[in-house]
Length: 351
Image (cartoon, rainbow, N blue to C red; front, side, top):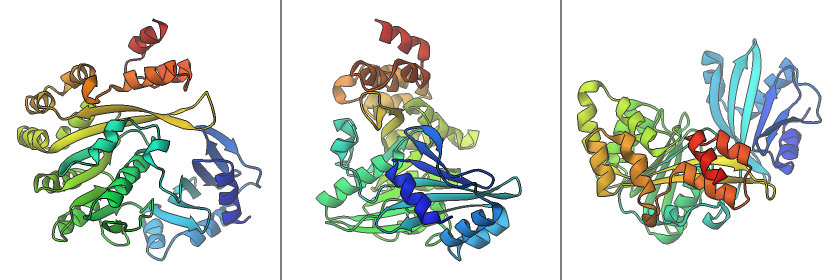
């Protein structure tokens, strides 16, 4: 069973993810639905061979030591893949996320225009949040690509692993991968400030050390883009503050209020009008009112500010979901299932 043949077939089928698990045939996720592929069951031996083909000399020792490793793999001319290899039931499981070779243009992603305006910010922290597979990396890649085409600046990305491959256009663009180029996001961020960057992309603010370094970079006049696994803006603010010890939380509220520029939260839906996926987008812009709420530990009031500032480009996730539904792009059941306030949204859709 040839690994690349399986991956080529999955890409041709429009899969977003491929799962190679010993004891099962290859399984592809196509428009959110898991579907077995027409290939034989993967044996433990074939799973081992697949991992050996994909993983580098750097990554195999990590897998052997802790039983879990992330890296990237490419089938030339077809696609790149973000890979996680892990142990399960004394054998190997491999999950691959398809990364398109060409970075999608803003216009093709159904993103609100306000997100493009964020690429004109000179400094501060911009967060793109959402569940795994919600399209955060694609949104960030489109933002970086837009800045790369417009500015004469220095852009540095820290990723785990490198996903979209950028080519320097007007900007000088460097991409660094955890494990290959830097040992951690926090270490990479500490050193990147000495490398004259203007724009920094941090793959994920996954721990206190990385979060603190990202906020410091934003405080010192850089534009910092990053992601979090949160579902809306108020939860994002609370998650960041909760990372810190209680005696430091007042200080971080003040720092975050000064540096945060915007939170974009997204959820992907299967389209009902045609094949494909479409995002529902919540946008919070850091107006003086939002900054005051962050300082005063009143993040729970942020949804009210979002709802009353739609003219500025803000939108709640549930409002975005309702617009997709009324435009005939998504189904009612999906809309209600993924809403922040399902009961409220159900009443809105019934009106």
